[in-house]
Structure formats: structure tokens, C-alpha cells
Length: 333
View (cartoon, rainbow, N blue to C red):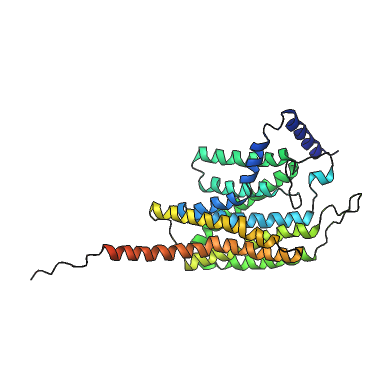
């Protein structure tokens, strides 16, 4: 047995030796480093705290997830339990194994916070610890090998470093903003063409069942391509036609976050799975998932900011009108 699988067996034996004492902790860490919680962080940062850092986080997440899916669907590495029946993971996981999507996302998300707030040493150390713990959690749970998580973290870190150079450059030269959605559209079209035309492994088990269905694995790729295209287009439109400010009263910040997060939860946890899950055909479901994730990022980065900026402007005018003195004093003669 290869070293990477032996390492997972060792962790599995440790889990059993301590009667799963740390299982819930690492499952929790894994959950908050990939799911809707990650998008919540980006939303709160973007809508109410630090807009430039929020923009960077959205772009870094979109790019890193896009590149992660490119590598996954290129190498088509099987999950550890497919490679060895001795591996008994704590949770199921879809998609191919290499690289780890959780490690990519954690490094991109928490790494963006480290890059943007690097003067706050204690905070940066905490974010770095979260990245390392997320990487280890994927090994501990048994769904990724060491090389999966290391390459995933490196990919996320490289995207953050690239963004640290590129995004300030675009801030200084806004005439080049159009390149972001243009490149996003070209890469998205090329990637969708690539994953639909390339060949995939079709290995079968002893019972004649396909070990991994490529069509189902491609669906994850469609989702992250949708997010990538959505964020690049929405980034451009918000910057050009909305350009809201986070310099607003605390009550406005709270309102933006509360209603926006509710909208996000309803969309991602209820609407999207109920619609895509009802479509039996995998290819059709993949394209619908692509549209849903595209609109999700389009909503979070462009449409929702447009809505709350318009509403806040109207409420501000109304309040200003109510506070105006209806009977101004007569001018002195």
C-alpha cells in the first residue's frame, strides 16, 4: 500500500482508538471551510466592512475554485476509499480527489484575509491555523490524501498572491476593468468545451458497476464555472454601475447583512437544491446548476448591492424630507 493511503489508515486507527473523540470537531472545521459559510464571510466583508477586501475575496474564491475544478477533471484521481477498501471515511464526498477543494477554498478565503490584514499578527496567525486545520481535517476524515490537501492549499495561496498584485493594479487603472469579465467569459467557454470533450476513466468494480460516473463529477465543474463567470461579470457591473459605499450607519450595515444572508441561505439551501435535484437527467441538471451558480454570484455581487443602494438612497431622501422645516422663517426685511 502506498504511503498516502497508509497515512490515512493510521489516522483511521487513531479515530477508532479514541472512540471518535475528535470526529465532530474536524467535521465542523471541514464544513465551515467550504460550504455556504465561506460565501457569508465574503458577503459581510463586501457589503458592510471592507469593500475592496470583499471584492478581492470574491474574485480569489471564484478563480481558485475554477482552477481547482480544472485540475480535478484533468487528473481524475479517485477518492481514497475507491483506491483501497480499507479506507472508511467519516463522510461521503463527491468529485474526484485531487486537489482538495476544501483546502483550496480555505487557503483562498482565509489567505485573502491574511493578505489584506497582514498588520494584525494575531488575526493572521488564527487564519493560518484555520488553513492548516482544514487541510488536516480532510485527511482525518478520510476523504483526501496528503498530496491532495498540500496542492490544494498551494493553489489557493498562489491565487491570493496573484490577486494581491493584480487587484490593486486594476484599482489604479480602471480602464482595464473590462478585461476581467472578458477573460472570465473566454475561460469559462473554453473550460466547458474542454470538460465536455475530454475522455474520463471508466473503471468498473467486481459487480460491473462504474467506480466513478464522469457525468456526475462534471456537474461540480459546471457549478464552479458558473460561480467564476458570475463573479467576474458581476464584479465589473457593480464597479461601473453601482459602486456602493460601506461608509454608512451601523443600522444600514446590519440590515444589508441580515437580509442578504437570509437571501443567500434561501437560495443555496432551499431553492437551488430543490430545483436541480428534481432534474433526473445529469447533463440537464449540470447546465441548470451552472445557471443557478452564475446567478447566485451575480445576485450577491451586483443585484443585491444595486437593490440596497437604491433603497437606502430613497429612504435617505424620505428622511431628509421629513426632517425639513415645513415653515421656514421669513427673511428679515
